[in-house]
Amino acid sequence: MKKLISVFLALCTVLSIALVCAGAQSSIKTTCGGEGVCDSVPTIVIPGIGQSQVYLVDDAGNFVYDKGEKINCFPAYFNVGNIVKRVIVPVLISLFSQRDAGLSKALCKVVDDCFYMNTCDSEGNPSKYGKLEEFPYSLAECSPEEKKIIYGHIPLQGYSEIAGEDHLYYFAYNSFGNNIQVVDRLYEYIEMVKAETGHDKVNIAPISLGGTVANGLLEYYSGRYEGKPCVYESLNKIVYIVPAVDGSSIVGDVMGLDLAFLNPDYLYNGFLEGLMDEKTARMIEILLRIFPDEMLMDVLNKVCEHLAGTVIAYSTNMWALVPSENYPACAEKWLSSPEMANIRKQTDLYYTAQKNRFDNLAAAQRAGAKAFNIVDYGVPLYNVGNSWNKENADGVIDLDSTSMGAYAANVGETLPEGYTQANTTCTNPDHNHISPDRVVDASTCALPDTTFFFAHQSHEATARNDIIMVLATELLAHDNIEDVYSDPAFPQFNQGRDTRGFKNDMLPLAKSIDQSKLTADEAARLNAAIEEAERVLATTAPKEGETEEAKANLRAVLVELGYMEPESEPEDPGMMKKISLWLYDKFGTNGFSEYPVTAAKKVFGR
Image 1 (tube, helix red, strand yellow):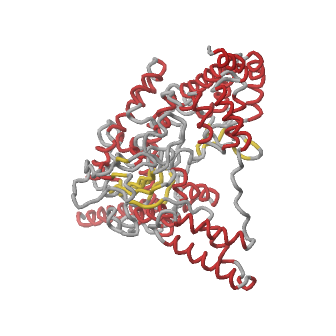
Image 2 (cartoon, helix red, strand yellow; image 1 turned 135 degrees about the vertical axis):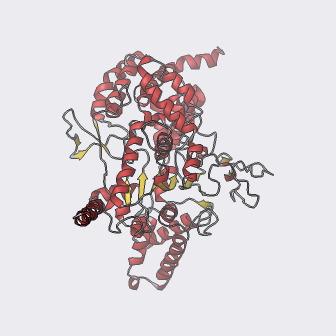
Image 3 (cartoon, one colour; image 1 turned 30 degrees about the vertical axis):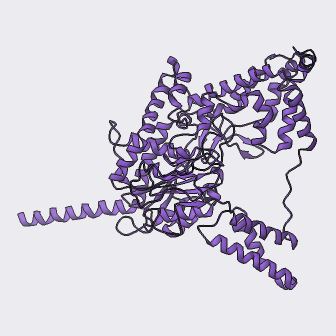
């Protein structure tokens, strides 16, 4: 009897184990079956600012539409008709009275109207009027429309071809949201991906603002905080792409109200030309003179202060973009009141994550995670804040932030003659971490042997650089590249490029042309241009300028043959420029109403 009972219990145990295993297996959605069967590791993309869809909803939670389309909340919703209604009367009264007759108040209300769906409460919770479009599943389960959105932001189709779309995930989050809540969701997302794929580890690819989310993940889930486990052993690779690990000076300047255009001399002589075509810029410079300069500056100051204090100051995700050196002063300015105490508590916590970013990354590496970084340089910051021309950048984020500490000469300059690499981090005397253009010293960054640099590459065009996407794919999908010396095809220092319209449009068009209708000379020029384009596009380490030259050459041939229209030339600013410069030369920053006084002072010397 005992033997019979023993056999029965053993069978029950085996059956239970089988049922548990079957249940676990049924939850796995990958075709590979998971760990031990598949060599690919699932990858989670943590996108950048504005790369997640947040749609406007009403009080009932229903989507709000404009011309049949759902309204995207990023960066705001600008209803031109409502804006005009809001400001038209104050503008006219202020124009006739030449003083601020409610104009600044009206413009602050415009800020409220445009950004209310992105304004968090005093606890840092996002507005109920913004609904995030999430992707709680792999790309294999995404609709064609969802895939188009995701691949449009980060074209990793090459990774999907290797690992399968069931191994690629896109972690969406609200750019204006709550940093701690976003990080908590990311940890849960990682656990979900592990369960769905059957893998014990994941890769994460933090992009731009996603770098701040990664900072939070490595800090809050370091095992040092009660109730939050350690995530380190769940990470196989961290492949950063232009990450804002120490924020951006643009946001630091905005929160410090250290804005370039609040200097009237710069507003009328350089600021607008850096943001738009010169003819439009010069026209605006002339129109702004309908107001006295002192009044105009006062209005701009009040509106900027309102935007910073009522929108950005309440978003802990936006605070994550304030550089660590700017944070103490900015926090003191905006977060000192009792009302902001809960916000301050959260931003102080992120500030800790920001300061610990290198130590936490090193701890993750010791736990087995491999870390790589892909960054851009050689493009000055947008000239919004006064820091725009003080250090090297990619147009949006400082190189010091994205590269995790690389030392570099400013844009357009080189390292001093005789400069030798500092070797702050890299101590191997055989390694040369100075860029061939003598602009960057990578020996000072946190990952000197696994950081790849692309010269003259803008932040916004990073996803349009096919080499960067191929490199990211190789790093995420394979283990062939251990460091910057592993593959000559991917050197540490490379050239930036934008192949949008070249690789997928112009070249296929050129190759589709019926050459039987061409003269021998035309066919020869076309084939030469095609051959050169294919050669350049096939290389992953182009020479400086050769991609642009090949693109221009192919376009010229296609235009000549009548298959493309010539590129339109920038509109000549002509008279607008002359008038604006003459006004600045004769009257400085004064508004039109101040000209008689200005002229009199010049005549009488007072």
